[in-house]
Length: 114
Image (cartoon, rainbow, N blue to C red; front, side):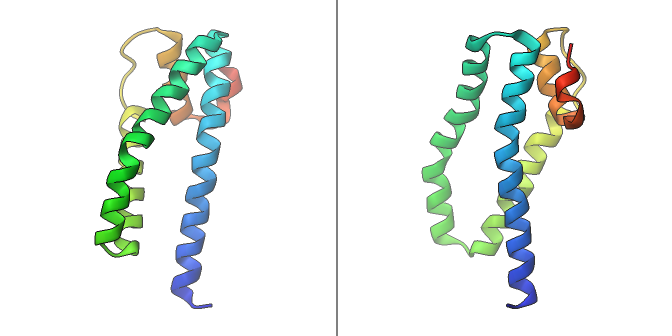
């Protein structure tokens, strides 16, 4: 195996692990913050609908441009999309809002959300 392949494999593997951890952490934080199954369903729906809407667009982009460029661009976009809310000041004392921000800021403290 070449060095380039190992780097791409490592980067994609870490990305996939992160993608798998986020829904679990989000579910734990929402349930801990609200105790509501309805709130959890709403948050998970909000996480799923954009994926369903953007998958066809992503497929078209992936067919037209080199795989490496698409993978890097996708990871950069995800980083920015997750970093912006993480650094935003809280807009309210709503427990859902605080829980969502806390996941981005300190994922190691998910179970300590009040």
